[in-house]
Image (cartoon, rainbow over all chains, first blue to last red; front, side, top):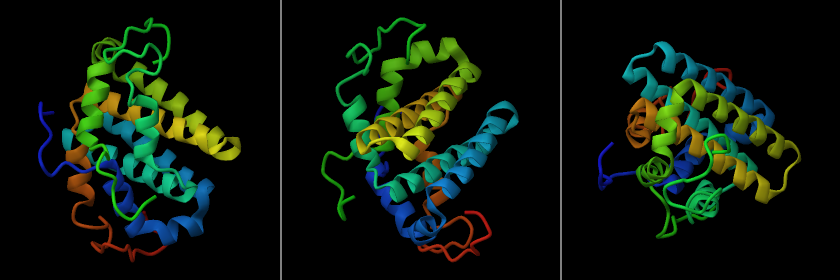
Length: 108
Length: 108
């Protein structure tokens, strides 16, 4: 990971819109419950790639989990950018610091 | 979700860097396996919020899942922006179309 974002770095809003353009019609027909099952399958594949996969395979599985998460957000009417801005826009939600000073036993 | 991104829309790279700045030291000490457990807990909370939660609660749970995913990516040395650019930058990975025409029984 670089210290500065490349100019082509995708925004969360753009990614969510891209996934919406690609899949929204199918996603709505499938509904949240059915879509969640796909997310779970991809989370399992991510676990597997983290244990035994190549860097390339890990890239693919992270992308898939992000895509299914965006899909569920689309069906649920949740704006991912708003979600992270509210929760993390002002630092760690636990201690309020940019570099977290929460106790290690605590979330997060 | 709006048709155009607000100017403040966060990039995936910025978000991953923010989570890194907040938590990287703890994340590395915990390792991928321990961090994955936290991700799973948050995925469970997201499921619960999708079934019974308010819109506000759903926003919070999506943010938490994204944050733990970014954390694991940081520990695994995976760039989330690169991940989605490779997999989804050229349209649906199944059919190559912007609006997916894959068979409904197929992924995705």
